[in-house]
Image 1 (cartoon, rainbow, N blue to C red):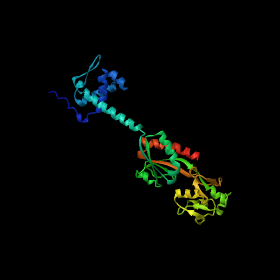
Image 2: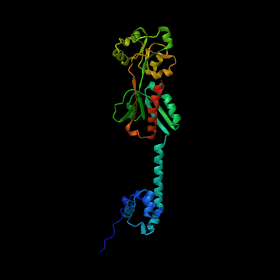
Image 3: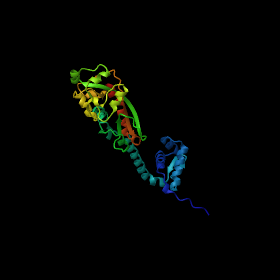
Image 4: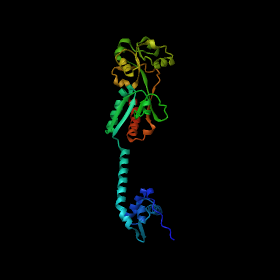
Length: 305
């Protein structure tokens, strides 16, 4: 007794073979279809055989002149084209997503950088990519990237979290500076030790400046500061108001008219500038475009300052 042919396994139907089926149907031969798809003819023949095995019927009659479609092939042709059209639309949609530059990107950075460093960079970014909408969050906590509360961070310390991708952009010069009104009243210091004879603007609970003076063998302590604040924006405004000599990132002076550098040869450790993004969203086209633009433009702005 002859055994019946195996039942088709339509549950495991491989719709990716439909592309090969339509190529043979439209080309009229295996060789022409293989050339059209960029395949070897034996490879295409195996794909057609696999599709026929899955549906349990022949789709083409092999003739000397090519491959003639069977009645079943003609019957399923329209449905196969619908599947192919759907695959093409999906591919086009994914391609558009990979190249789109329209949408929201949230950038977080310190108050000072948000106020002085990033505005010209963001202005240039939106000229280059008018479809981007930038949300700028002034926040000193790097953890907001880990909680996905922001897409990109510009930080003045190296992020240590392993889930972040970070790139160092530059070292930001920190300079001693004062408003010309103050210097007209008090004169300009000629050497670092002259700072002891001047009114100084310092930090309150932050001991960064005190530790920096100690490292430079300058006996300047917290009580030498005639005005103290840990708010970086307020700190810059105190210097700009002529309260005394302070220490600011060099790029701030562009936005503080009348504030000039003093003691230009005084060695002050620079502030590193880092760009960070969460590893899982780095591939997002909007985030990647913004990240790359910031990485290119921020060093240029700092160099110009």
